[in-house]
Length: 111
Length: 113
Image (cartoon, rainbow over all chains, first blue to last red):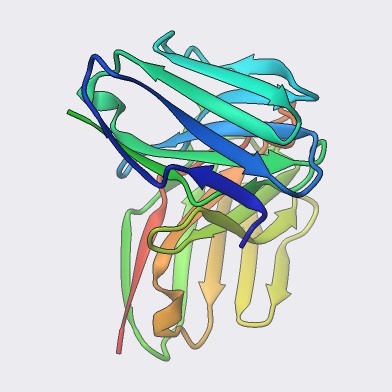
């Protein structure tokens, strides 16, 4: 138990669906992150939120839309995804520039 | 470029030592990390080394850093079946804040009994 909880753990969606991934951290951290993990590829940083403000968006397609309503919650809204978006999506949190604590990930399959 | 390179697979026998290698990109990186990902789980920080160190030992883990060659290695002594996992090397290049790690592709360690 890392203190970072992601739901759902598994998600299968069609290309026309709209779904959301949720992340909640119970560590009192002030920064949260979305990473994408594809098979045999490096982890890709997608979004960074610090004090609930987005500070990084690494050229992620607009079909991925993050939301950070407060410092404990982070969402990734998914809309009209492509099969190549199938991956493990990892949420992480940190206190300032400290150690990253990762959730267990949401395994997304786009049909 | 911003590629951290690792070999994809390593297979060892239980009780042997495992050495996982990584080549990183920026000799100015201040911290270098090793993360472990067990099946079905997220990444867990295993150990890290500050760039002014050559070696760091923590129980069965030894991290070696060669800044000249930008080479990082993780040695696991007396490897156990529970060490089977994917191991990621990561760096923080200068100018990146703490969370903006650059990760390698991961090395899948398989430990055979």
